[in-house]
Structure formats: structure tokens, C-alpha cells
Length: 240
Image (cartoon, rainbow, N blue to C red; front, side, top):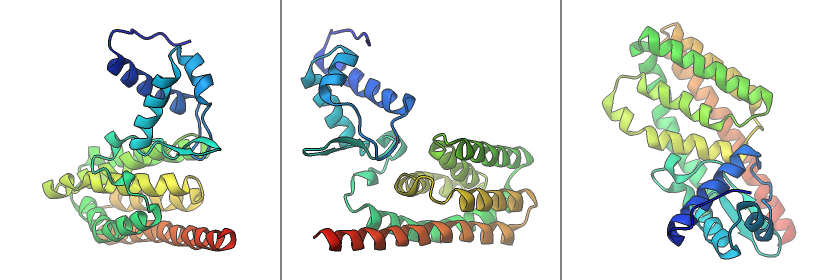
């Protein structure tokens, strides 16, 4: 059982919210899976059910959990709003949001990759290749690769040496997070191959190769998203 200081109920609620998030990550409770009910959580954390409800409500507002009446509470994301400073994860139509984010990514990331191939230092290139390796290792081992995937794309943007692009990193991070949470491991082979192609082109100081590899990476992602959207609409028509 977890131990918490009961000095201030508001502080306790925040502590339990953090503890519940840590529980989700450490178990881990995968995206789409149900967390224990509030009775079990209250016993686990040694607090009242009202405090558990407060913590769940907080994570719902951050896009981490979704309460389904009569079914339970499910994990919808493993990244909090601290990884989504724009708050876009709270928008309800996830497919529309993801496609709009892809429009922005296609405008930005191929050119960013091209700039990085021109401007990145040797140390930055080493780090980009290292992040590519680490993302692949996590992917292949079945562990949560999403934070490392976000870091990979973020570091490529930093390597462009363009200060304006650096201010756009939160948009890129949110886009990567949104897509990864919706598809999770369905494009493992394609993601690994295109990540490697991007990293190699940057290492070779090949701007056109880096741009093309990034376009291919984003194209695979967008095609999968559209496929899932069509399947979702078809299922909705069947059960409507």
C-alpha cells in the first residue's frame, strides 16, 4: 500500500493523480486496457474513493483516461499534457486532429530533415543515430517506444539550427504522440526502416535523401491512419 501525507486534501489529490499515472506506466497498463476499479485503487493507495475519483477526473482531463459508463475506465494515452503543451489531445475527434497534424508535419518535417542533414554537428548526428537505435530497441522488445520516438523527431528539429523551428517542436511532439497513441505498434517494421533511412541520410549529409526518407515515413503513417479511419466509420455504420 502507498503512503501519503494527509496534510491538505488538494495536495493529496495531486499526489494520488501522480501515483496513478506512475502505476499506469510501471505495470504497464497498455493503451486500450482497463485500469482497476475505484474500490481496488482506493485499497491500493490507502485513500478514499472520492480521492480516487478526483485523481481519475484529473487524468481524464489530460487525455490519459476515458471513463466508459457501465464498462470501466480505460487508458487512452501514456503521455500527459506536459508532453502536449498545446492541449490538442483534449480535442474529441482524434482522427480529424491526427490528419490535421499530418498536414502540418508534411509542411514542416521533410524540410526540417533536409536542413538538419546540412547543419547538424557530428555530436548531434551521433545523438540522432543513438535515439534511432534506442527507439528501435524499445519497439522490438515490446516496451513503450513513444517517448523515445518523440525525442528522435524533436532532436532532428533541433539539429536544423533554426531557432524558429525549435519553437515549433511542441507541435511536432504532439503530432508524433497523437499518431503513436492511436496506432501504437501497427507500423513497427515501416517505422524502424524509415527512421533508419532518415538517420542514415542525415549522417551522410544528404539533404535530399533525408527529405525523401521523412516523406516516406510520414506517408506510411498517414496511410495507416486513413485505413483506421475507414474501418472505424465502417464499424460505426454496422452498429448504428
